[in-house]
Image 1 (cartoon, rainbow, N blue to C red):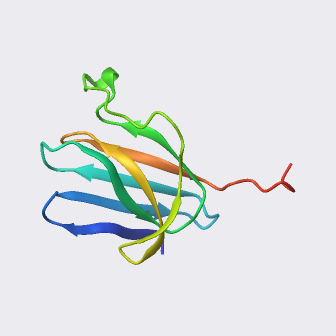
Image 2: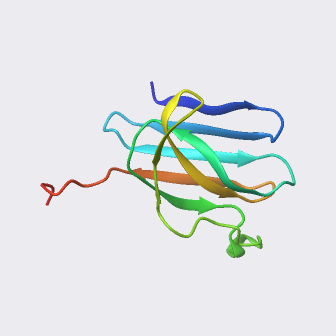
Length: 111
């Protein structure tokens, strides 16, 4: 129950994405690009509305990468992508890997 393929069959662009979940509802999305192509706004299907923060990117300059990263938190957009109700548009560097942390949107009643 803690693992789900999100993108597994994009053989044209060789992008894969998985979700790891724990019993408390915490979630991480891992995305990998196995080609030299750069993707801007690649739509990754996700299971939940809310915010997704990039917490690791192999293309960051500290890893001698080109810094093609997702600087801001990405709010999930409503729209069907690979049979999911929501998606996040992400920038993916050539041969890059990244991890996003799911953060639920706080309601006005949350303190």
